[in-house]
Image: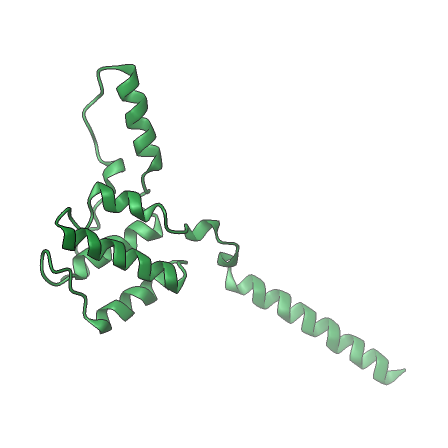
Length: 148
């Protein structure tokens, strides 16, 4: 599949027909709020997985493609485990015939940990800066101790 193919928007973000009753409008808003944003790492990875699958209902994914997709998921902030879960959910959607990016698949993706909610997704440079400052403080203390 082509890497330049457009990534589809989640179903919750697509235009829908207006609901005639207030109850249906509230239900529609609740469903939309529970959906994924187009920029959500889980949805972006799911779209890439769907584009990479071989066979409509077979949902086959060669090992080298799977490794590349997991690496992309990790680079987007997902844990390796969560990236593999996204792949499994999309494959299951394709294999059951409901569609690789169906509403049920989208709802299942919301159960996977959002990378923004993980405390470990702080920038790497921040951790490196803290380690450098700590090392500098230790080095300074060592020099002062040796000179006195």
